[in-house]
Image (cartoon, rainbow, N blue to C red; front, top):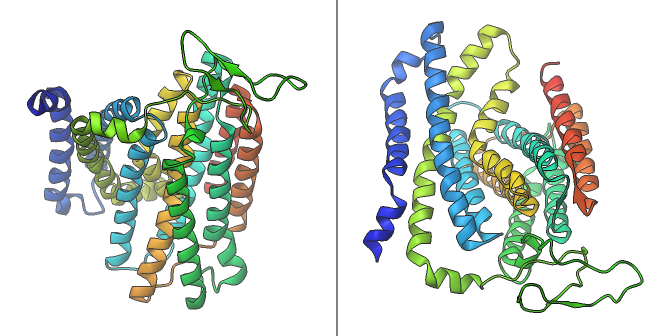
Length: 404
């Protein structure tokens, strides 16, 4: 049983992607001295193009495994595997940079802010735009989406706004860091327990065949479709989720396949993150010659790191899976902020480094606009291409701020 499962998962294409990714990582390490700035322009362009090509190869492998896991586990568990795989690696690498030589007081702030703008505006905007063109409108589970947005509002406020108001020079004081760490980790842990437990159904796709009666009709009805079990159509969000096999039964029945695909996903995604951070130096060198702003490098790196999730989100939108888009995008941001900020604060306390988290007024304004827009967008029962266009417009304004 195990041998056929291994052969069906570790296919020649999957193995080739792993080999390409890790050979590229090894080659970059070996060629490190040759790529120390200033690098000749032809070599710089060639190296960057090669790295991007390898990242694309690995990204499609990650998307392939993530979609298999999503189909097998169902949401929110399938999306959570991809999200945590990328976010945990990202947190480890940011922590490693902070523990290394040099001053990196703003790395967490810059990275998480870039990720916030990319996820909430670029990826969600593009997904809703494409999904709206394909399907006209998309229905999402408003209860689960509201939970995500509530988490994002609280965590980003603690991360970017509060240090500017109660901190010193953009950093939390020693006595303020511990409560912030405990609150962030405690809230994130509580969210995960609820999401994977009793509230898991709030993060599943809506069955479009089932609907809530209009006002004036009975609030609870029983619906039976094509021989499916009777399901209560009452829901606080006006949505009904499709029943699914309990996660424990799925894990018991398909344990070998799930473990092997999770291993393959992590082994394939790790080169993406390693290469994207290694190419930061090359990007800084190239953008510096072009006279581009320093913040652009962090934005491009963040876009590359979350490329697999971005591709998966767009594909989900094309398939009409609005809640999966939410699980991937909003879930990624909740995990990024909920894990990165406590991690860097703990490292700052251990090493005596100042961790600057307070954002500039312009970025705080954009973050506030983004959060307000997100609440407005997903308060709607159906989201459309128009909603996507407004998010993309805010991302364009963010780019304008970077170049200002």
